Amino acid sequence: MSATPKQLEKLKVIGGKINEATRIVIVSHVSPDADTVGTALGLSDILREQGKDVTVLVPTPAMSNLRGIPGWDEVVFDENEARRRVGKAEMIIAVDNTGLTRFGNWKWVMEYAKDHGVTTVNLDHHDTNSEYADFNYVEPDAPAAAVVITRLAQVMEWNISPRAATDLFAGLSSDTGNFRGKAAQWEAFLTGAHLLKAGADKGTVARITGGRGMTLQEVRLVGMAYDNVVVNSDGVAYVGISQEMLARAGIAPEDSKIVLWKLNELMGWKAMVVMTERRRGQFAVSVRTRHGYSAIDIAGAFGGGGHYNAAGVAMYGGTLERNLAKVVARATEVVRGKAAPGPDVGLAA
Ligand SMILES: [Mn+2]
Image (cartoon, rainbow, N blue to C red):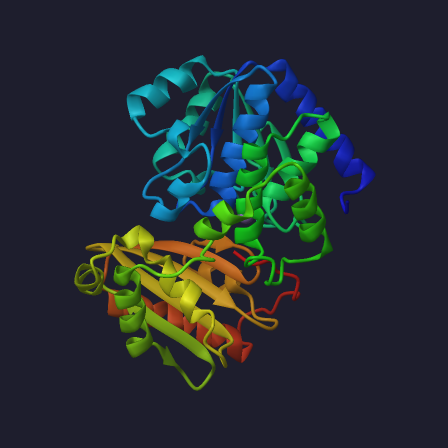
C-alpha cells in the first residue's frame, strides 16, 4: 500500500471517530459517477455490519447505469426523509467530494451539520480537495475513492462483504478506465485483487462501467456525436449535445456520458470538451486532457474542478454554442501553453 505511516495514522484516527458514532449519513458528489456511489454504498454496507445505522444520499440527476450498483435501492432521494435522517445523525461522511460546491441538491446537509455541531468527515482522493470537514483524509495518489475506503476498512479491520467489495470494485474500475487508464497504477490492481478475493462480482461491475454494449438510444446519440465532433488545429476536440439531439435519440441528459466514453476512443486530441444541455440554460461540461495538459486549468476557469486529466463544470445561462465556444477557447489556450502547465500526474475521471 502506498499510503505513508502518517497517512495510515490519520486514517486510523478517523476510523476511531466513526467507531464512536452510531447514526451516520454518507453523501456522494453531484453528477455522481460509479466511484462516488460505489464508495458510498460500499462504506454503508461495511458500517452497517459494524452495527451502524447508515443512510446514503446521492445528488440527482444520476446516470441510470448507477442503478446497477448493489445497494442502490437503499439510497434516500426524498428530501423530507433525508432531513429526518440528517436531523438524527451523529456524523456526516462525504466521499469522493472535493468541496462544498459539489453537494448538489444535498448542499444543505453540510450547512446543517455545521450549524448543529454534527461531526463531518471528508474521505477523498482529489488533490483539489478544499478540506472542508472536521476530519479530512485526502490521498491524491489513490487511484479512486474506493481505494481510500478499502484502506480504511483494512486499517480498522472491518469486514468487506461481497456486496461492499462489488460496490468498491465498481468505483475502482470506473476511475481507472476499467483498469486501462492513467490511474490504473499497481495499487489499483492490488486493491482490485483484494476486492475480488472479498467476493466482488466483476460481471455486475462490467455492466455498470461501460463494459457492456450500447442501447439503441445510445447508438443514436453517439452517432450524432460522431457526426458533429470537431478537432481544431490545436488538437482540441469538442462537441455539443443539445436538448434536440437528446430528444431525437430518446435519451435522458444524465445518460449522455456514453458520448464521452465513446469519443475517448478518438485519436489525435490533446483536450476534449463535451457539453450537454441538461435543460434550457443549464449545461454540464466534461473536460478530458492527454499529455501534460491540465483539465483543471480548463474547467477551473469556469469554476469547475476535478482531476488533472478529467474535470467538469456546470454552466448556467447563455446558449450551447456560445458556452461551448468559450470553453473551447480556454482549452485551446491551455494546449497552446498560454495557461500555466501543471505536472503530468493526473488520474482518470
Ligand atoms: Mn473518484
